[in-house]
Amino acid sequence: MRSIGQIKAQISKINDKIGQCKGQRGDLDSEIKVLQNRRNELNKKITNDPKNKRQVSDHAVVRYMEHILGMNIEELEQQILVDHRAERVVKNGVVVTVKPKKEKRK
Image (cartoon, rainbow, N blue to C red):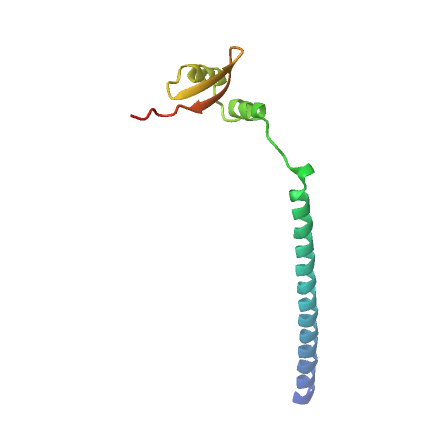
């Protein structure tokens, strides 16, 4: 059987090892934060680069409405032609844009 002194010495060694591990963990945590910050900065560069800006065409919006949202585009076209709330801009016989009608002031 070990003496209390030997057991206390083992406990002390274990405590020292725990302290070393905590120190290493602290160093690793700091390094992880530095790396995460660097990664975030690089991601921002990608996101903010005009070459990576994605735009969506009007055609893609219409197809999304039709194919994904299940909207009936032909019905929508008919509504555009008859809706009394809409001011239509027509060029060469084609409605090119629609705006809300301005209310007439009395």
